[in-house]
Length: 339
Image (cartoon, rainbow, N blue to C red; front, side):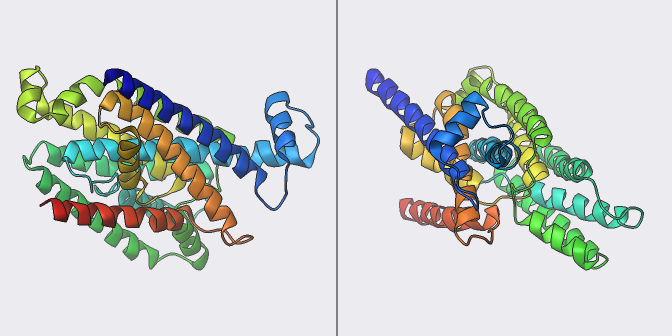
């Protein structure tokens, strides 16, 4: 049985790697300017044709966007897996604690205040304010995590924090001009269109460090999945471990919100797709697997967003909602039948 599991895991990882490459090439190939597969391979591997338009399109526009979708998609899916482990609830997602609402609130406030002094707000400040808002809500959640014992109560607290942040945002929008309202609305729907190499480098470093820290928790996470009593018998401090889980999940989710805006349903749907594919919930397998699946899922959704109604572009949040919402409904109906 162990040999069969190893073969299944290996085959699944290889399949995901192949699918990743296929979607990468298909995404680079697709757009208003058609670029052949051979030309893509030569430009990516041999760096040929530096003066050609295709070279600039790939290296300056399409590739950073695709890699940003891969990095942030993986982070979002991993965040969802951690929150589902934390709450022991398959419907829990990375935005259920109000993190995206906090990012949107702070961004709205700073944008409106900034516009009174300077015409346009720098992209770097956009990222910093979004990240600050995400971290602010995380700190509130961590505070309440030490005060309440019930996971269901903490979940409700998170939803209420999100509602408060949304209410403040709606109030602040009353003082915004038309251009600011359009920008905030576009960002709040989620998009990878503003990706750049500098932003990609920052996002990659933050998420890589968080991924490594998450992977180091795989062994205690396995014990935690078997029950709190078992985890305590293994010498795990449950209270501290819960704080570690929610901190890592919030960090990953905050990075996504800061660089691409709130993206719905990825954190809920992808972990379940991964469990079905690999046939296991073991953290040591699921952590890298769910990250890969999240990357592929968001890259595929970004491709659909760019091409479904071309030349118009859908928001990434719209596409992930259309695909992810039925999966969530299926999960809820399935749980009802189990009861």
